[in-house]
Image (cartoon, rainbow, N blue to C red; front, top):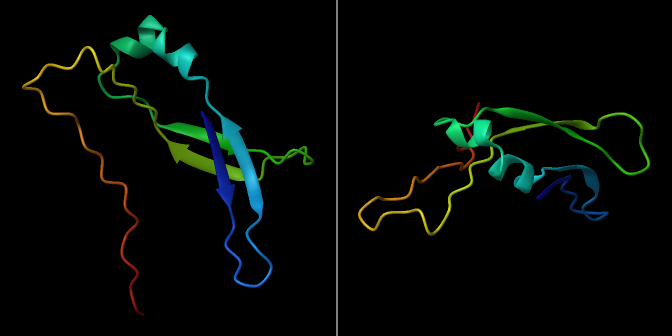
Length: 89
């Protein structure tokens, strides 16, 4: 899975800030990762192809659910990740 972060520009178009790649197979087939109930928070460095230094950090977690392991009566977890509403100061 690749995570990309872009800036938002009204005039000159959006530009990529950086990207990070997460190996899902490495996590899915790792027994230690499978045994964790709560997946750990990850700090992923963002890199731009022509830059040697990190362009920032993304804080995230990876949760993989198998479709064939779900029970019919068990509801899937829903994560609400909407940004906080803007506040006027």
